[in-house]
Amino acid sequence: MSTRNELNTITSTLTELAARITHLVESEGDTMANDVYTELVAAERTVGALLRRLSRVASRST
Image 1 (cartoon, rainbow, N blue to C red):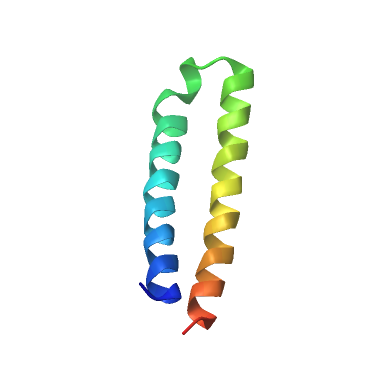
Image 2: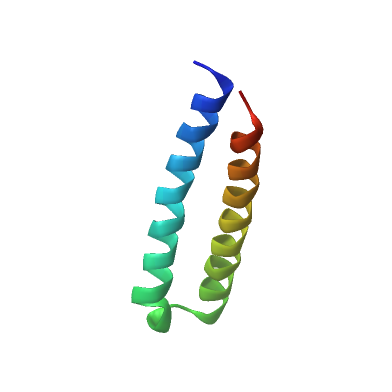
């Protein structure tokens, strides 16, 4: 598998993960303990940043 294909696969998987975290935060955030909610929001931001970086790398790879 080429590097670009591998990066695209990873990016796709992380996109799904990001969507799942976002859904959890949005649908159940008001029922979560405050510290759990805070950590999930931080994880959501971290995954988003990782996705942006991987997308940049994937666009430059051949």
